Image (tube, rainbow, N blue to C red; front, side):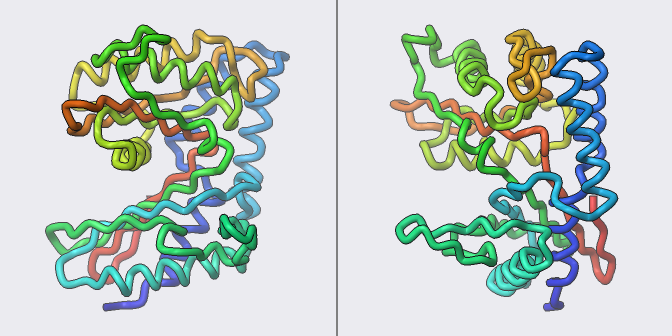
Length: 290
């Protein structure tokens, strides 16, 4: 199997320093919706200037380069163990080159490893064997601020008047946005999972963030709910960084999963405006990024 460490390093660099076009487009639309001269417009203009500077200087978009979340689909016969070692080597090199901030901290000792390598959960790597001969590696860099305002609800929830239905999902998602009050660096994006157990629901909510901004859910009921949550989230008046305004939620993606009869979890993974998501595709000798 070929060594892809160099190519994986470039994937990390792109994710950290070069915001995807679909995310930047949505940010520009949000900025245009805010009143000129307002604190919200000023925050959005600063965000966009930062995006341009990071891209031009190949420096991190945000000081907190977050937890690296890798989603790997590999062809039959490839070695996940070898791919894991190459990913870890790329992450360590990216840290050395300052594309990533050292973020791996031992929870017991408080010691930072200095290279973003910890146990088997840091960086987080999900493997899936796929048909065909193409390797895809998706990377999301999820900052600590937005991770802190993620939430999980067990329905029914009497306080929210939220039952075990899509209306209950809507109420839970909007409550999570309201409670955040701009923390986690609004405006942001929501990955929402319905069902699962507590652990799998959080994973599914993060996997929902792999979709491009503007993708339409294949389930029409969920597509309508995603649009409604986005619209109503923006009516809360929280705005960029909590300064007030029209831009609080820039998009929502919902992933339904199976559950136990006794449980009905709704899990919201919040992603800040720095929606750092990139993908590398390897087909034969050809390597491409998007």
